[in-house]
Amino acid sequence: MDATVDGMRSGSAEPISKAKGTGRIADPIFVTLLWASGIFVLILLGLIIAELFKGGLPALQHFGLDFIWSSAWNPVTENFGALVMIYGTLFSAIIAVVVALPLSFGIAFFLTEIAPQPLKRPIGVAVQLLAAVPSIIYGMWGFFVIVPLIAAYVQPPLIDLFGDLPVIGALFAGPPLGSGMLTAGLILAVMILPFITAMFVETLESVPPMLKESAYGIGATTYEVYKNVSVPYGKTAMVGAIMLGLGRALGETMAVTFVIGNATRMSASLFAPGATIASTIANEFPEAPIGSLKLTSLLQLGFILFVISFIVLALSRALVRSRLD
Amino acid sequence: MASLAARRATDRAVKAISTGFAVFALFLLGWILWTLLSRGLPALGSNVFTQVTKPPGQGGGLLNAIVGSLIQIGIAMVIGGPIGIFCGTFLAENGRGTKIGAAARFVNDILLSAPSILVGLFIYTLLVVPFGGFSGWAGSLALAILVIPVIVRTTEDMLNLVPVGLREAAFALGAPQWKVVMFITWRAARAGIVTGVLLAIARAAGETAPLLFTSLGNNAMSTDLSKPMASLPIAIYQFAGSPFDDWVSLAWAGALLITVGVLVLNVASRLFLARGH
Image 1: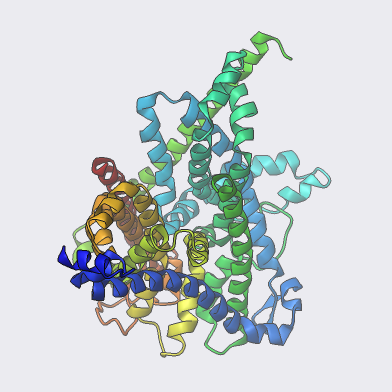
Image 2: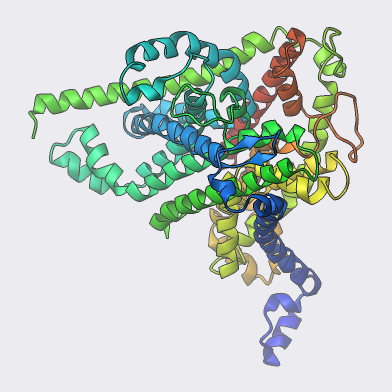
């Protein structure tokens, strides 16, 4: 106490904490540690980008920018390109979003407007648990359970129905293997569903009750309030949620590796086996010795995936945060 | 505008469909659990916990994989836990309103959702190639990088819930910042921070892709961190894709173990948080 009073008398501008014994040494160390760990995370991202770029540079130097547009992937002639995998990554992720979106809209509607209060939390948690199931478990479930089901019951009728039509028929071309783009997209849809739903629910619950009550007051039904008041109110953040789902689907590895068929060919068909960037890296890595052109090509693929994910995730974040800030 | 009857019919139809979707999501979770139980439970004998991997046809278990996973997750948490908690504290306290704080928050959000396989590639080029081989250390570090953003996010969110008045009261008594943070804010947000740590462990336990390029996997028992180390997810990946029936059923047993562990951690963290508040 004396120290503080003296400090004040002598007109010292030092904060009180500095005058205390423990604060003089411990505080600067503690604050430095706090800043250091914050800056560490910044450096971490920079390091990841730099290492992936450096690792893939030899492939870029060898093939030039054509690497991105080349559909070749031939380990025998050492001719590599990224186009097939970029296409597969985007195709499977877009299928996932298209399938997950209506489900998320419905489940969010159910959780915010329909579910009885005591059921809300347990059902919400159960949906969230779908996000906790590890990727590799989805892979096994997909490979051993979903792939045979799709091969037996989904693909044959679809091929019978649409296979002979012009234009649309291309989407359903090929033998009913079970694995392929559609299966990968469906598994991814289940995996991103909880993320999109959780952010939808969070957004919808932030809609001011006054707005909704005004709409109810002029006789709108629950669905009309949802469609015309709640969803438009949270539109920006909800688009951000969809982008987050897309970003998650782009980089998913193990689940996709099990069910996509791993063919480095490009096809317009939903049923054709394909490959994503992540599945190609996981699959081909064991046969890519250190220093080989193949390994640097895989690292370059990794860098491309990072750039795509970064753009999508940054966009998602900007949209979600724009409402908050 | 449509007639009232038509509007109410639409409303009922949409409600029915939405409820159906929610039931479908629950059905999917049940389906996955049922698949794991029906295929994993018969394979879950005591050999799974007491024996190491053996060549196909000779039985064997997952002891080396379980031990390897526990070691790597443990080290990942020892490294990532403090960094994550400190960074989360930085974002909620000193970094608030600063440019570096905003940048770190942005980067953390990106790291949280970035493809985990790229973290594996990063550690591969950073450590595995220069230091001449796959190792338990490399796997642990890859997992540490993956748990940091989870802990940062939860820690920041939970510290933001601590009333400012509590901090101000402590500062007014002349407490230095380290005391305020450690004995007031951290203590007030304890349940939330533990939740983040539990969720981070759950994430690390299920990650497979980053370990492919770092600790690689090991069919023998090894606790040497400088050598390739087994882990449950890698063992599952290796066995599930094999043509041998006994290996595939071991993979199901491992899958059941991991999923039950991860789901229990998730539910426990939620209960813990609910009780803490």
